[in-house]
Each structure stands twice: as structure tokens, then as C-alpha cells.
Length: 168
Image (cartoon, rainbow, N blue to C red; front, side, top):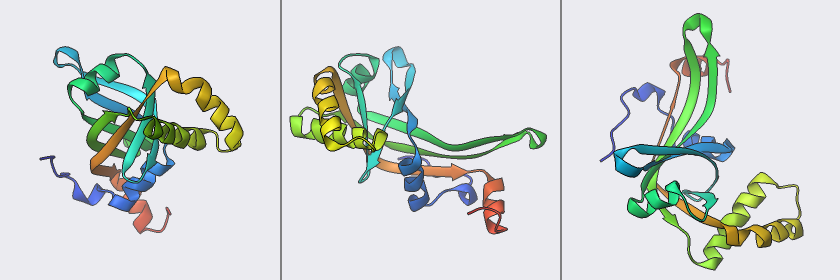
């Protein structure tokens, strides 16, 4: 069982946490690495319908770790404003916990890479995206993270600003 957040006043709602995932463009995937060391790697991603999708090289530490243990977490930092005079940061972040799987069926792989392509180059037309996908699909693996638990938190100062009408 995952722990409950200790500072509940700072906890983001499910909707606010999802909004962070939808806004974000990069996060850090954490897996159980070799010899008991955690392994965390920054990745581009796309979020849809309670799932995150990533691409990867066909071999490597990340895939080996997922094959060993599919339990992973993924962190997205939405805001990190350093406020030196207060010795703090005004932060907002989300951590998704869930199970990762390497997509093997061609239809799933294509659907996932199309989501990523649309997310990162929406100005390109379908023809351009499909040409890029055709060129790259054989060189990449696609990974799906099905979110089982989502936890978001923000600095108490941001909560105060919002309650004082200073922040939207």
C-alpha cells in the first residue's frame, strides 16, 4: 500500500494532478535498477486516459529493469521557482505510480507513437508524422505506464497566493 501524503493541505486534487501531466513535456521515470540501485531517467512523454506513453531505444537499462520489475514511478515538475530570500522554492509536482509494459502489438505501438508525434509536433500534418513514424518505428520500443496511484503536491505559498486571489 502506498503512503498517504503527510501534508494534506498541500495535496493537489486528482484533476489538478492530471492537469500537471497534461501540461508537462518531460519527467523522470524511476525503476528498480541493477544490484538494488534505483535507476531514474528523464523522458519525454504523453498522457492520455490514465496512461503515460514513452519511447525508448530497443535495448538498455530501462527496458531490462521494466522486464525485471514492472512497478515504476514517474515524476513531473510543473513549477520550481526559487525564492532565495525565503530559503525555499514555490514548487508544484506530481508523481504517478503504476505498472509499465513494453508494447508488442503493432497496432498498440503505432497508436502510442502517433500520440507522442502529435503531442510534440502538432503543426506537422498527418502525412509528415506518418513518414517520420515509418522511418523510426522499427528502431524504438514503446512503453505504456498504467497509472495506479497519482499524487500531486504544491508549496504552501502557492496555496496561500491562490486563496488570497493572487494566483489562478
